[in-house]
Image (cartoon, rainbow, N blue to C red; front, side, top):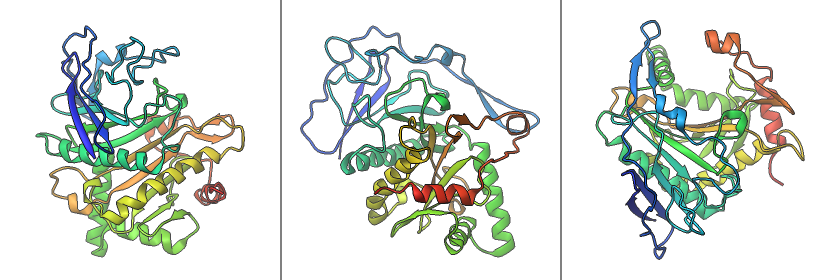
Length: 346
C-alpha cells in the first residue's frame, strides 16, 4: 500500500491510499478556501453524565448537492472538488464540517471514485485497501493525545440522514469514551467478576452454540443477530480470536474480512425483495478505547443495522426509544437471522 499526504487549500490534511505505486498525487487544491479551524464546544449533561458536542458550524455543511456537484468526486473538467486528483482509489480527508476538532478529529473516507458505487460492490483488492486505510487511521489517531476511542463507520441512505450520496464513510476520533462503550465496559467488568471470563468471548461462544441467530461464518469470523437486537435487522460480526481493534488483526483474519463484510451488506440489500431500493444502514467498527485501563476486556466487532423494518416502512425512534432509550423491536431476532440467511449470494 502507498500513502500520499497533501494539504487542501484551507490547511486540512488529505491522504491518498493506493494499492501500488505509480499514480500521480501531486495536484494542488485551487479553491479559495478560508483557513479551517472552527471549534466545537463539549458539554457534559449533569443528569446523565453524557458528553454532547455543540457544533453550530455543521449547519452549513453540504446538503444533497445537485447532480454533477458532488464534493467527493474527483476534480475533473475544471470543476474542483474536495479531492484535487482526476481519479483515486481510496481517499481519507479531514472533514470540512467536523463534529470534533482539537481535541478530537473527524475524517471522511471515500471508498471509490465511482459516484454510483457502493462498499458491497467493491472488488477484493479495493475492499482490502479500505480496510488497510481504516487500520492505518486507527493506529495514527489512537496515538494522538487526548483521544478516547476511534470509530470507523458508514452511514448509507437518505433514511439514515446521509446528505452526500457518494459511497463514503467516516472516522471519529472521540476526545472521550462514548457512553455506549462505557456501558459495555461496565457489563464486561460485572461479567468478569461473576464468572471469571471475558464477556465478548462468552457472547460469541453462546451464539455459535445456539446457532439460531448465526447469519454467516468463516474460518476466522462469525456474524449473528444479537439475542436482544435493538433494530429490526441488526448483525454483529466478530473475529473468533478476540482482539481490541483493527490494528491487532492477524493476517488470515484480515484477508477473510473484506469478503464476509461485503457479503453481509449484499444480504441487507436483498432483504426486501427484487426491485426494492438499496437498504439504508449504519455499519460501524466498535474498537477498544485508547489507553483505557479496561482496554483488554473489549472485543473488536462490526455492527450493521437498518432502520427499515419492512418494505416501505421504517423503524422510527419515537417516545420510548428517544425519550427513555428503551427499544421495542418489531422483528424477532431469530426471524431476522433466518431472513438474512435466505438472502445469501447465489
